[in-house]
Amino acid sequence: MTSPALLVLEDGRVFRGRSFGAVGQALGEAVFSTGMTGYQETLTDPSYRGQVVVMTAPHVGNTGMNDEDPESRRIWVAGYVVRDPSPVPSNWRSRRTLEEDLVASGVVGVRDIDTRALTRHLRDRGAMRVGIFSGSAAEVPEDQLVARVLASPPMAGCDLTDEVTADQAYVVPALGEERFVVAAVDLGIKSMTPQRMAERGMTVHVLPADVTAEEMLARGRDGVFFSNGPGDPAVAEHAVSLMRAALEARRPVFGICFGHQMLGRALGFGTYKLRFGHRGINQPVQDLASGRVAVTAHNHGFAVDAPVGEKIATAFGAVEVSHVCLNDGVVEGLRCLDVPAFSVQYHPEAAAGPHDAADLFDDFAHLMARASADAGEVR
Image 1 (spheres, one colour):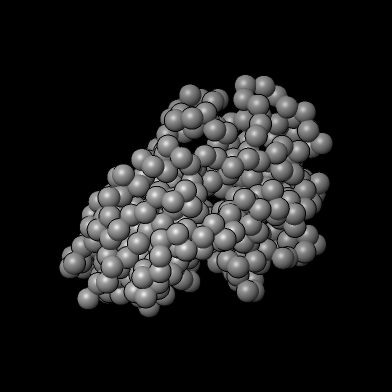
Image 2 (image 1 turned 90 degrees about the vertical axis):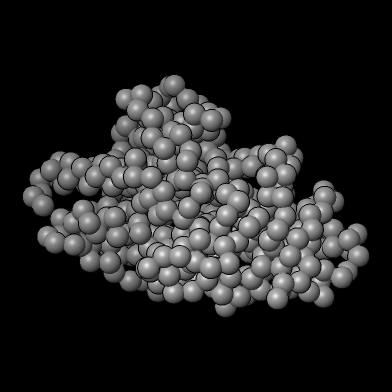
């Protein structure tokens, strides 16, 4: 039985609906995801730590929840907002309903609100803090609820890596013949990412974010990968130091999402918070070298501040912007010209999402093969 629920934005706007999932209070940054499918992967993406996710697709939960598609060990969203959840899932792999998993994870959500109006509001005003209140929490006067929202921490300045990284290192073995051994720094990694590398003959050592540079380089014999993750890249100092160590060692580097921002910072570029970020599985990105456009999966609220269309001198040699978002011109990729390193802001592992960018893992393999050949080794 649902109870009345309120969604309260920091600017004072209130949406009224019904409870969905756990009953209580949830606080976080309000963001919207434009994907029409893949809600299970969204919920279990560690990059959503501290965020209340608004689903722009009106009907959510159709296929239930299964045991094969989670991208991590738990649901990470701070809260969940849907318009019309499916009362009965229909899929042969379904084991539970979406709401059952939200309740089991203690995730407070709200349903039956105008998510289109809410999304348009966020598009106009920008991402902002929000609270979901249901049960007895919804009985508090609205001005007090707004005060609670305003007292919650903003995403800018938040260091969330330690909350989502692995407790200890683990290994994902190569599928078939082992070609490379890679260290993957877990800043909030999704499980499909090392799987994609394993499919290409890489044995992946997934390492906690507090790993030392020495262990990272020892484990990553052939290359180092930096994963996606939540929080403000401007405060992730240890991850930046790990990136610099990999560049100084001339170890082949591939970074995605938060890892892309770490490469940008290590090269001397700044980062900034986007007005409402890019989230969902339908974002167009152009490769500036080939002109090719890929439809890609995104989840980021910050971006690298680097000039487009020129070679930039850095402490690690020349660098160029390799990809841009066609919606707003945001930097979506970096390519180092004098050290073996590159990065993209989006998610090539395609969980959930299109497979247009899957060849980036092949590019990483080629980069490591060239480095091995240059060193006179045979893999």
